[in-house]
Image 1 (cartoon, helix red, strand yellow):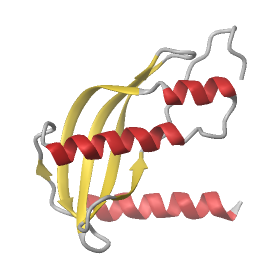
Image 2 (image 1 turned 60 degrees about the vertical axis):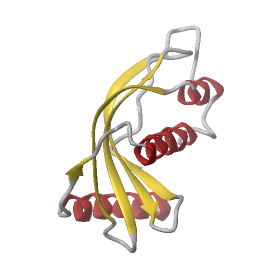
Image 3 (image 1 turned 90 degrees about the vertical axis):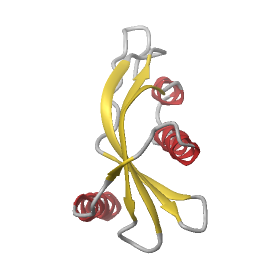
Image 4 (image 1 turned 120 degrees about the vertical axis):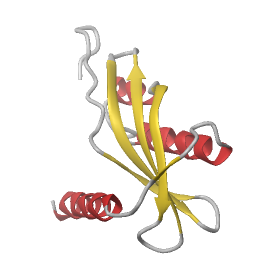
Length: 132
């Protein structure tokens, strides 16, 4: 029970501190931004790696049909860059979902990524043929 509380506290602290940092708009087609976006999608897909088969498949099928905005700022914790995305996430099988999410990608200055923060988990709607 303590682990989820610690995770939520960390996410809240991260988003609070990150909101105080001056952000700059970034071209969503820059190679490093595209890589950060693909990393974010791969991490979001993992959020349901141990769910029921239908949930897991829906998360694996998530895609990003629209990048609404991207901003960057220096990392609050250590050297690196944070990318602040407003993304539309969507899946159609086996459940349906379409929603806009705020996702922060934490990039290390030495290359690679540390992780992500997402505002909320995508809430998949299922039809009767796909029980939870």
